[in-house]
Image (cartoon, rainbow, N blue to C red):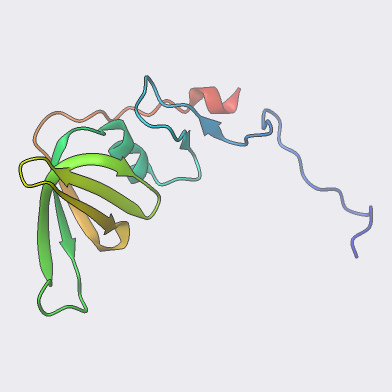
Length: 118
């Protein structure tokens, strides 16, 4: 319907991958991205660290508030995967229910986006 009257916008420096950067080292097999939440990126940068995840399930009477103790295995836009080697338990937690994350050690926080805007 548009024909050639209006052209699609192009942005300088945007390659075929868009605004995607690779994480330092071997943090995750998935790249960090400006489209992804900063919380997800911070959790990915801290993969392998022990954490306490405080979550709330407002529609549940049994699991109103829950604390998960474990190691960050993976983090996605809408989920967090934790494991507890002492019990063998694994949890897939929707980020929707996560209130906050408490780390037992110093966290990696610096995400370098400078390569994105060349």
